Length: 414
Image (tube, rainbow, N blue to C red):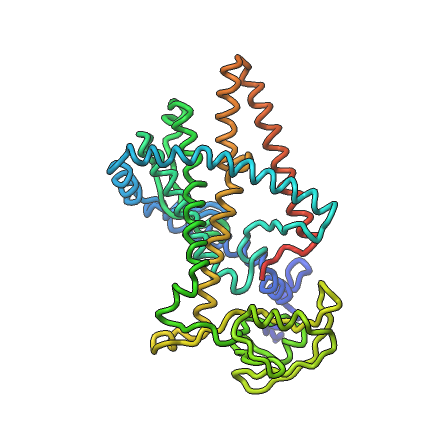
């Protein structure tokens, strides 16, 4: 009787070895993402989760609840006159963000042609694709804070102007968590343009406030951790660059106290010393793991300077039992969370106001164009033509920034 044992060689489907296919699936983040969402959609259809307020579609999960609606309404109704004054500030701020975002992308695109080394990298936030590794942990917190503040502001602005929030809740788009509010669009269209502009600019204004708050925390970071950690007393290695001298000697969590007999108490002192180090120079480090030695190589940007290949952060000695339990890496993790929340909130405040379809900036510029056209007795078709032209130019400039960033450095933030 023939054997039917399961082996790698006899499991084929349409000429494709299923073990190889499984290996490819495990190796490809994009394939894993597609399989994940396929399973989510199938489970959602099978269990009929709509009765629990869950709406599942490809790459998007929505959970709607009226509790958040009631919370927004109560807060907005406590001092509606004050909220109206506050969100009025969002109109010029939103328009300023729109102009700055467009200007930045345009000038940055020119730099890619004139002086590529000075051009900033413009990378779309795609968890697991453009952003990977430990950065994902900081990113999810930053996204949660930034998106929630953004949508809450839209809801508060709408309710303060007597425009009801139809639904609200949390969402997962691809792998990006966030919150949402759904407004009564029919009622909003009948309202004066100044009310609509307040609502469109509210989200960007909220993100700007969050960014300023977290910038304040960054500036006062050492004061913030002072109850738990002492002043810097060395340099903490947070990561190493594979294939460099540092990767063969150091591991994350190592603390450097001296280089060639010179004490270094902070990252600033450490970098000031390395500025004068040449390629091929031997460095002896006094560290928390004993004496370590390496020979520098050429710096990838400046061949006249020595290069080690490590990422560093100030070492803050723990003050008490609680901080010892948290560990020496805790200040670094905390700093990264604050830093990413600042960067993401600021980016969202600016780029969400670009005149691009589905962005708040598109709705703001559309209302401004329509009002201007009405005053000058122009047709609706003319205003739509102008809107499409502005949106098309903005999308083109943004895509070109993405493309040239990819050609320059790739699309991955470690």
